[in-house]
Image (tube, rainbow, N blue to C red; front, side, top):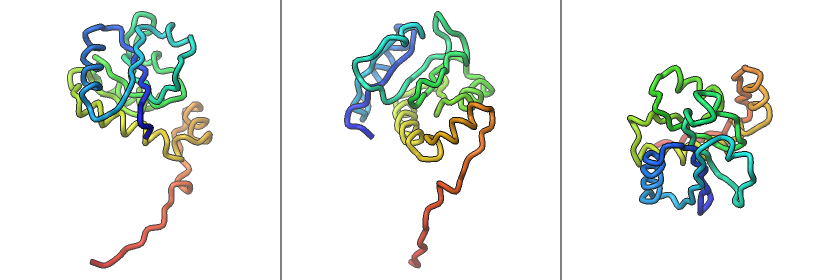
Length: 155
């Protein structure tokens, strides 16, 4: 993981954004947060390379799962919609994690960010075959690329 993480935060609520930024500031992560309030703000170029996106599903110009538009980086969804079906669909649509805002805390956020970045970098999920199958609605994995030699040693 990079020394300094550049985190995109899509959050229209100032209160929620302050809470998230406060948690990140006091976490063990070294990060810079680039906050936007709408999807429209994502069209412009950023002066840094982003490492991860934290997305609220309900912002002024996008509601629900349409907010996830595969920005080409790991996604953690932070949403007031704590519905399990919404969470599962967000994961199917490309998010690496989903944190309901009513269960949000610093530890959960930090862990979700770390795991999402690692998960996205792992070969079966960052390869073109996985993304092509996911876009086609087939969540199939080529597990042959995941095999590792394991050596068992007696105690």
